[in-house]
Every structure is written in C-alpha cells, then in structure tokens.
Length: 323
Image 1: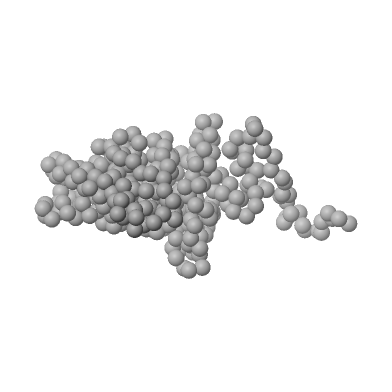
Image 2: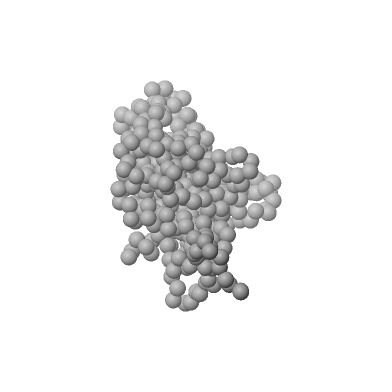
C-alpha cells in the first residue's frame, strides 16, 4: 500500500518534508524555521547554524562568545555586520587577521569601490588600483594611508609610556582613534579584545616592525594575547564560537577552547573542501576528535560564501534579539 510504513520507521521517518509557504507577511525567522525541517541540502545547515547562534548569543548570557573572521570580509559591506554585532555586544572576544585591521583603518578614512573578477590586472596596476576579488582598492586608500595612521597611533602609545604591548592593546588604541563605522571603534568602546595572532602578516604589522627599528625598546608581546585568552577560556562556564572563514583565526579559536574541554556551541562558514586535508576545509565535527569541540556541542558547518550569507544570518539574530 502506498505510503505504508514498516515497523520501526517512526524513529527514522519522523519529520516530513513540506513545501515552503512564503507570503508577504513572512519574516526571516519563519523562513529559517521552515528551512530547518524542510530545507534541502545546505539550507538545513544554514538554518541549524542560525538556531545555534540564537541559543548561544540570546539564551546563554553566561556563555563566553568568540567571533573569528578573515580579513577580506572587511573590504565588503559585511564589515557593517561585524561592526553591528560588536556594537550590540553579541560577542566577548574577536580573533582575526592583520588585514582586518588594515581594511578597517583604510575604510574609516577613504572608500573602496565595486569591481569585477574579470578586470584586467595590468591595467589596474597602471591606474594604481588594487583588486581584491571584485572589490577595487585605490592605492592611495591603502598603503600610504595606513602607514600614516598607524605610525601616529604607535608614536602616541610610545609617548604615553607603552613599551611592551599585545595585539589587543594595539587594536584597542587604533579603535579609539576611529569613527563609528569601524568595528575596531566598537570593540574599543565595548571593551571587546581584538586578538591578531598573525599580526605581522599585513600592513599594520609591517608598521609595528618599522616603528621598532627606530624604537628598539618598543616590543610586541604576543604572549600577553595568549594570557588574555587563557583568562577568558578558563573563566568560562560555557563557550561558543561563530567562525567566519578558516585559517589562523579559526584555528586559534579552536586551539584555546580545547583547554576547557572544547566549545559548547560552534558555527563555521567556509567555501573550502575537506578532501585536501586543510584546516579551512575541516568540518567543525572534526574538531571533536581533537577535544576542541565537546561531544555534546551544538555545532554545524555551513558551506557557502560568507558575504552572501551574513546579511540573512544577522537579520535573523537581530530580529530574535528584539523579541
């Protein structure tokens, strides 16, 4: 008989797929709720990720929340989403790469422009324009500008007596000099440490090295960053992370959370495949075997391009927070 179930099927066949029914009155959270049970393929991971983030950010006030992201996002409109997440105190600590600081400084004072992946790079070089994917970065808005602003910040820190500094202290001081469009500004204002374990790999890091050449007693102390993370991790009742993109920012987040037995909540966005053995491609579930995510954690990996997904994820979080 059509539709007849065998004995024992109830355990397996408990959630029927239903067609989405979206009307003009549907809000973003009702759409994600429908995707959670009836979405296809990657959309269910996306819906699950949104639900995990809601629980982590809204329902767990005692959870220490990590936000990690890759630098390229700060060249796009997604910078505004990161800014607003920090403005609204959704996270307690940021782990990112040097380029995130570079782009945040540059865009605080100048503009980036829409481009195309297929533009002629030799022509762009002649016109003194950098290309970051399909984002155009005028050379005048990047290197020379960042050099000027960072040297001024480091000089002011030095005059104020700073000699042994962490990356979160440098990021905090830079943030204090920027306007409200900056994610570093809101991290500074809300006392959210921004830790950059690979800070020498970028424009800000190069300027720190250059400043040290003339001020040999000015030292970059990465171990102060590690002590800050140690204090946060070992003092956490629970911990969760929203990891946007892979690389060092993702790994440093996972690495430190292994010392408290792993993350209790973990959502990861990536476009990388897992078959090449890369960290960026590794599913969050793989981190369970390393003790970096607990065996009982709510966790998921979302395969997708972050600048496309973040506006919808943040809209759902913001709507849920208002309830």
